[in-house]
Length: 357
Image (tube, rainbow, N blue to C red; front, side, top):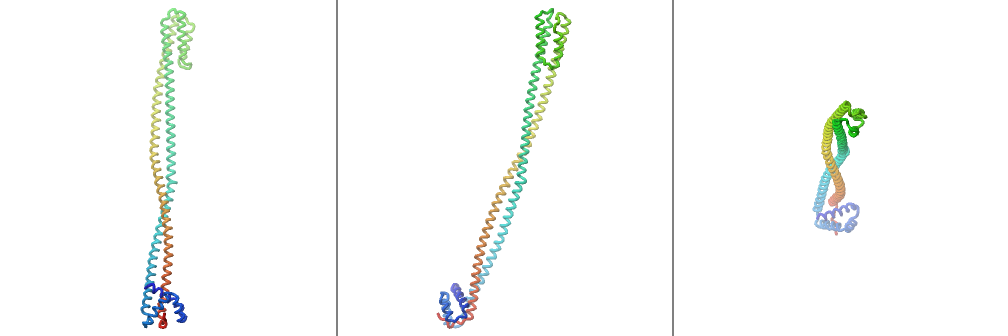
């Protein structure tokens, strides 16, 4: 029924534009379309029934009211959709802005805080490891020096022990000399040479040996006075050797104590370096984990930003389509409303008694 009425309205609107034309020409114009012929048929039926076209007027008025309500409903729904669209735009723009802020802050934290912190920790660890290497090098040097000192001590003591044995041999030989033969004198002189060979030139015992050799050279060993002097010198020389051995032994003990104390000190320094390295490694591990966390957060916020921007673009495109549909629909409503109002005015004012189909 409404389709027929709309068709009639369109035809009546056309008639309204042709009101200045003759009835014959108006009728011929309406005969050109199905809607026009339907209108003429309804008008003919009304004319045969006589009276005002009340039912037609009521139908057109109802159509006008429906069009007004439809237009109001269309505007209401579009305004609600516009409000939703604007609210969604505000929300998406805020989310995009917040994502941008999060990305910027994350990059700032990574570049200006975490990366410098990581590099600083790595440099400190590298320095401490270098200190440890130097520390171990000092330990090796101390061990080598101690080993060389100990070897020198043992060699010196061995020489002094050999000298002591040679002196003891010489004293034993002198105790048997009584009108010594040439062979005995020669043997004694060989013992002196053996003692001389065992003593370094710069040794503090060298003067004793020199005095002994001088005294023994070209002496008559039958003279008991000479023998007594040689024995005295040899005993002094032997005492000097023993004193030297004792001095070297005491120095060896002191050197070993100093060495052990130095090793303890170096080991303590190494342990302290390691303690600091362990603490820094804990801090470095935490920093690296924080870098990974912030990086993952930054990357996620970048994805979020891209998602929000896609949603924003999609919403704008969808809303643009809906605006076009709204405008087209509204224009159609307004066109139908204008036609209906013109038709209503025409129906109320035109006499259809002479119209036949």
